[in-house]
Image 1 (cartoon, one colour):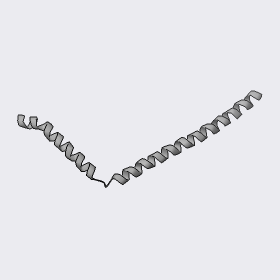
Image 2 (spheres, one colour; image 1 turned 60 degrees about the vertical axis):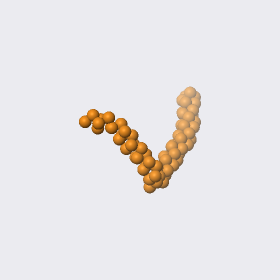
Image 3 (tube, one colour; image 1 turned 90 degrees about the horizontal axis):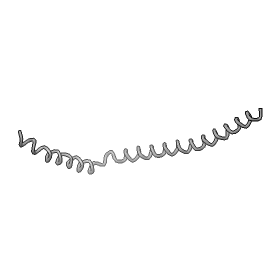
Image 4 (cartoon, rainbow, N blue to C red; image 1 turned 90 degrees about the vertical axis):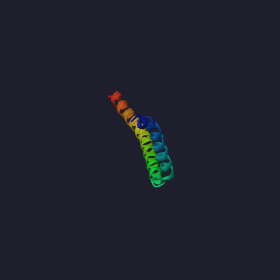
Length: 72
């Protein structure tokens, strides 16, 4: 029993090392990951761009509303 417990860190290290080696060699999902990252990047940039346009438009609209309210 104690032999198995003392060998546990070594077996965990070897299992993780084998997993990392096989993960590095496996290139099947790499293009899917790249496409997903690029899609997320484009979506974030589009949201930032739209938010910039909307915030400027909303500020102009608010200025018009407050200036008209001050005139009344």
